[in-house]
Image (cartoon, rainbow, N blue to C red; front, side, top):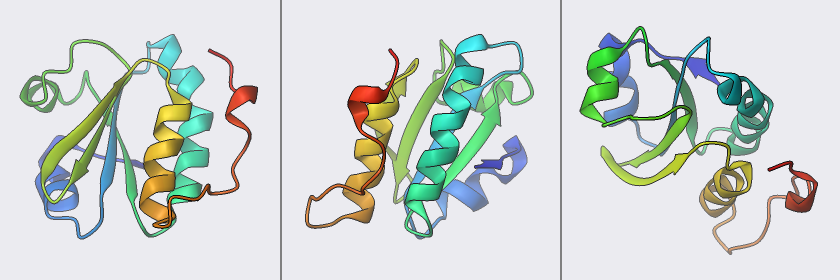
Length: 120
């Protein structure tokens, strides 16, 4: 997962040749910290077929406003420069399924951890 500054957003996300998961987070956000290991796993699963970025909502207020981020963590899936899905809170299974659909075109699974082992 790569940290992303507001000024780099358009060039790195909107112009990307692959889908991007953009995670809005903050240092003080406990659920964001809980989600971090799952996001690292998801970034590893994605490989070169998707990008995973972390945006500090406090340091990027215009970007948070642009995407109407009202709660943290918020994860936005962006493909071809437009938002296609959004996850609020801690939903690692949902994020894994996004990445699996991007990396396994046959609709198979990626071989990652069993979703039943994920705390809610």
